[in-house]
Length: 79
Image (cartoon, rainbow, N blue to C red; front, side, top):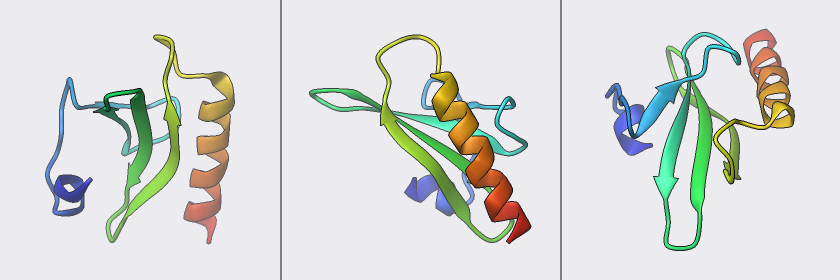
């Protein structure tokens, strides 16, 4: 996250775009000893907005996570 905050653009396999959520949204992959974490974030002009953090257990991102991220992104952009 620190590299993203400093303006770095991360690519696969560390981060991938998430266009179903919105523009400039990405999924950061963090592998830990006990789990594989995902951080869904949006790169705004003045901030990196964390939309969700969860452990991923399957290949696809759960629909509930995508919908929640869309809602949070909309709230952020309309604030």
